[in-house]
Length: 306
Image (cartoon, rainbow, N blue to C red; front, top):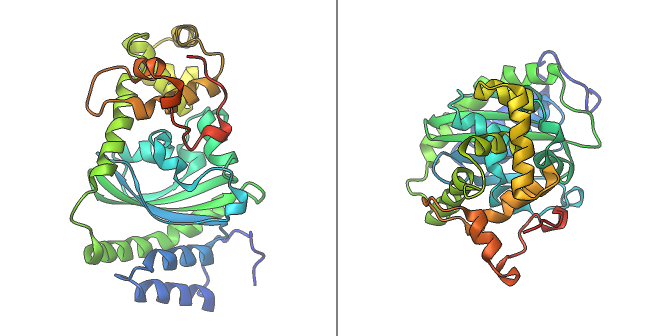
């Protein structure tokens, strides 16, 4: 038997692997199918947690399954779905229209991603060091995302792991297509759509009363983990100009750190008007302290000046 975290450059048809493949195939169309997929991926390479969710373009993601050790996590399970999912590299890749495939965090994350508040909150705070996603396109606006994760106390995934996962991916995607055909929901949940529209409105209008359009473009790249250099490349601008924009953003918002910027953005989501053009920051700052609910990130937020 292989050591638990030894990477495999090939997939020998061991009894464990064949049994996991058989159980996944047998469970197609059943409620426990996603569990069998995670069991199969766990037979391919070591994992510490994982799950599945549906990505939507016009509503927030919907969690299907998440297996993890609650003792290793200091945030509520719903923290990700409260709004920060919009900054997730895999969700952003989905919005860009990426095809079905295997996506390793280290390959798709922006260059400054590991220094962002998003990484600090949604990786270190939930005890993760690395993740791999198997994204299967349902259509242009929807995708099923199956993810596996490594604990911060364990080795990160290696290239050999990705080779092994990629080798089994066609089987997983073929089973996914059949499972979706048998179980696809026909209706959308209005509350999920409303929450997503608030997030999208915050992205579009946050600090619009204080910042220029260009500064707000730079701001979104900042909280998403892009360096000044990569932001300049994406916006076809000079890096020095981008750095000036960053300084102006900090000055105009009266903040001194990435942590404050991230918290301010997240705090404003509940105050956004779905499909509106008003600045949610203005509404948030005018609201009495008693009406600012303690959200799922309260335990890790710094005090933000308003």
